[in-house]
Length: 177
Image (cartoon, rainbow, N blue to C red):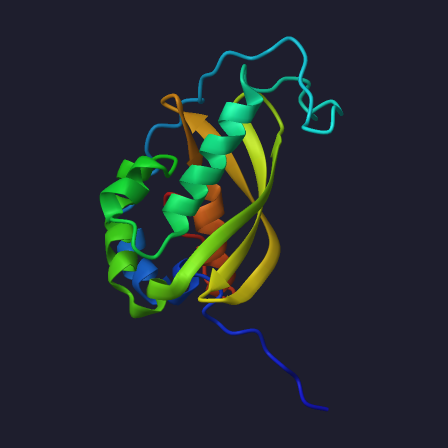
């Protein structure tokens, strides 16, 4: 029986795991302060069902659009590092890693298409997305988190770290993740 294996370049983060390990020691844990937002009294998903946390952002449609925009920006191959830092939770702490990732040739084709955003609270959301390399979907229906930090919806640090750890195939957890 022939076993078909998924490509190791599951994400630009996956391709760059070779450079993550040496840089991981330079990544601090950063500020662990909680994101802030103005919650609503009751929350609902787009289909009218209650959100798991019972609260959601004051303007869920606007927040959903910002989550989608920032995820697309973060995973777009041509996004400059400073713009990625701005839409990544604790991005300043992970800036050096992002700079190296931007130079990785395998990162040049990777993108994400957001297919769903579900708010779990006024400051967090679960994001469903397809991770692609060119036109090829590498990880369909993947899930990650978005967090509201400094009044901006950002890709969670745990999402980036999870992709990197997944690609490392058993490597130890990265400091700062």
